[in-house]
Image (cartoon, rainbow, N blue to C red; front, side, top):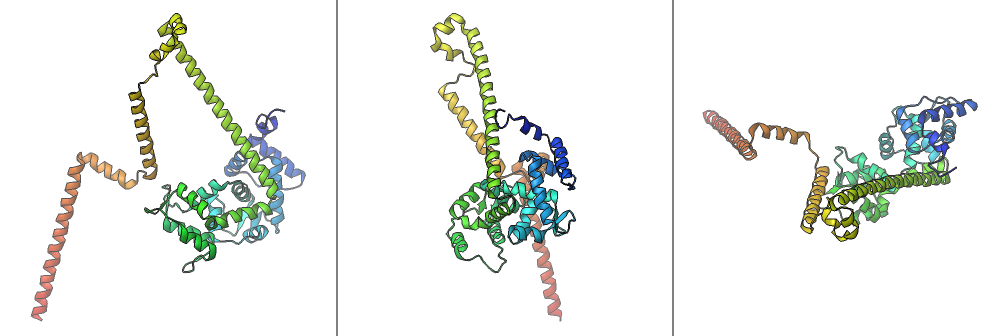
Length: 359
């Protein structure tokens, strides 16, 4: 029945409401009670193209771990099942996916979101997650100190202890940037140079995949997601190609009207002179220069976002009107205040000396 995306079955399951109706029906057949859905689960189901049979498999694993049949799985049972240790970093991963584990147990919705999303993460997404977790101000980069804390947390090392062996050797061999800013490109370079530093997070993912549904299932799921994404990219490119073709056809008609049919077909080498988008070499170079400046400015804006303090400063400038005058006045006020404080300290010192002399 056609391609993967054109399959009526896939189109049916893209509708989350129908997906959950069928999911409840399947689970009721097996006399299971399914928790109520929430928007986060709905988003996970749609983004990962999970079908009712997939969710029923997750539910079967979940109920197997729910030994007390309370509708919750204890964290100890979860970590025992995946043969992993609970650390501060695994807690950060759960917090990243919005999992509520404050009571030492997790609900099925959280279980599904955590396992399905985390196990479908590729290398780049895991590295971005690590960066996001420690980018407390969400400015697009962390410091070298944050990276060191990240490494210690992943390897479950608490100061004053330090990492040892190959991990320590990898850290010591790193050439970190002079400004100590670690953005995604830098953290990806560090991963390629010293993968041992990030080994625990990938091992944690690997253990979950083995324990829950198996490596083959996750491999097939990831391949299917890649196929779906590639198909979507092809659709976008085809749509863009059609848009460009329409624009060229429209421009061709404009050139025909300006030149006339006879000149258009008999003298095609003159068409560029009637092209509304025609530019000289100088104009093209200027356009490229302006585009490069705009791109550079966008990169600077991303690295240096407008803060609340800067907005306050701009409002003050609007009131004063002259930036240099404003800065000069602030410096004069600061100097005047400093001089007044020095005079007061000198007066108090003289008074203390006078009192000491009287005693």
